[in-house]
Image (cartoon, rainbow, N blue to C red; front, side):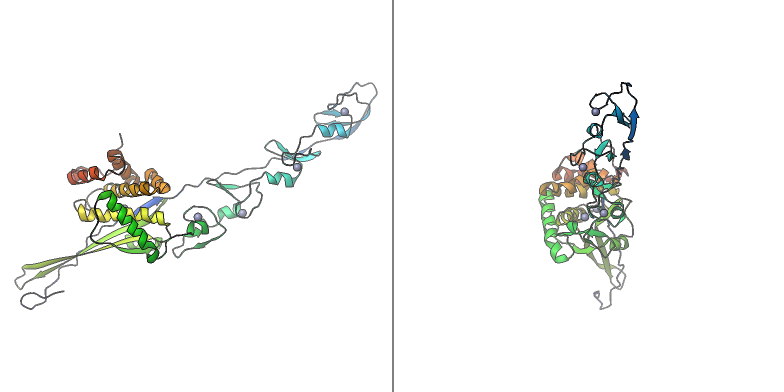
Length: 374
Ligand SMILES: [Zn+2]
Ligand SMILES: [Zn+2]
Ligand SMILES: [Zn+2]
Ligand SMILES: [Zn+2]
Ligand SMILES: [Zn+2]
């Protein structure tokens, strides 16, 4: 606060806040579930019988005439145990001929439980052979493991991992190299700034303050929760505080604007996820500074679509293909629909055409939802 020309304290008007906040969300992976069931036990019903002389009965195995004691089976009569055994199937696992009692799964015979188990799916975590397995993506689990905690990133159950402060579980594999503190994250923010600059030719003179936060913090800061199946990864917040100084006659002597920019990013992201997210949020910063006419009244898909467009260009530049695919396939009407609108209009990474559009488009005429693609 400063003083006016008469030595009186100027009365500040405000602070007036102008908010710009964006939910920056990515779709979760879909889960697939399938189960496999085992076939029943085949019992070869064998009965020894006695043939009367001159019956003309023939062995179903060797074709020889049956006299006296013979074996009566489901599929015919046999002159000896050896002849019957020859008709039994070979074990699909060990190759040995199956005994009279063996196991059949999906029409394939196994001599023993041990042999059958070699062909059953096994739980990836406990190694148990499974008659009923749960398949998630391309991975197989037993029922207890499939019902246990799942990694927030790969969506899979895990044997080694941890629980984060905000309740997310993460497997050790996905957690390798993840960013949890500012010192580790800053170089990646610098990379994102550099790449947004390379793509757009614009480098903001001010660097937003970086904060690493949990999902619980996002709910509190943005006062909203993302749509089902979406997870918030970033948020750009810009606050403008206006202080107006007046003289004794109430005339405005000086108006002072102070802008605070904060870039919130979810902790626990891998460096490439962090860069893709930061590129999106830094584009919000760019739009706020360079295209203030793209304000609160412009439909959300315009800003989110442009931010995803720049983020996609960064992903393409770096070979972050899984991130790129998530942007391209996003079912969200603002993030996915907005991105596809600009991608269709300007192809990949044509910032100059997009900038021209930003300068000239009649923003008031834009529909609430991105127009359908031709
Ligand atoms: Zn956004
Ligand atoms: Zn025979
Ligand atoms: Zn066997
Ligand atoms: Zn298991
Ligand atoms: Zn994982």
